[in-house]
Length: 149
Image 1 (cartoon, one colour):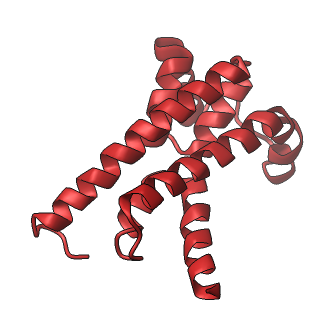
Image 2 (cartoon, helix red, strand yellow):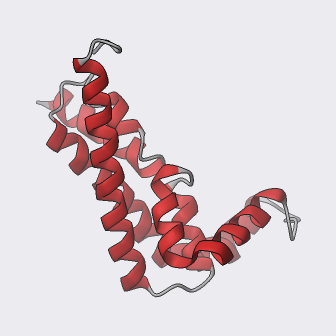
Image 3 (tube, rainbow, N blue to C red):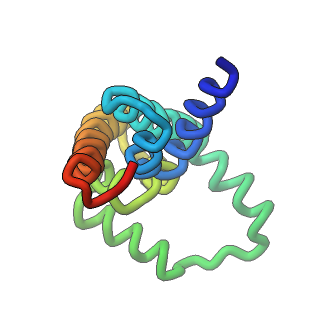
């Protein structure tokens, strides 16, 4: 029982960092597709909740503690600004599970002051979409024999 809890907790915590981990690791752990999708979305939404509510505090208090002299415009920040200007809230929420990490996407939308309800809705919808696509893609690869379980 304790091992099962640790298994689910570990994959959930990885989902908080990057949404692709549960679809890749879930089949090896013996999880069903529904469990994998649920854990993926739960991890994504946990990151979004934490970083959306604490995003400004993290940016002003915690990051300067670790980075003494932050660069104003690094290549990474320029890319984030370009993504935001080009695609807006919907585009960032769409790209967060795919390209950005859940903390990165949540910090980006929190930094620009996007409406929280809109962010939560789009992150949930796109998180479900990507989790389903990835889970069934990995399942198809396993079933077709291209990848071993």
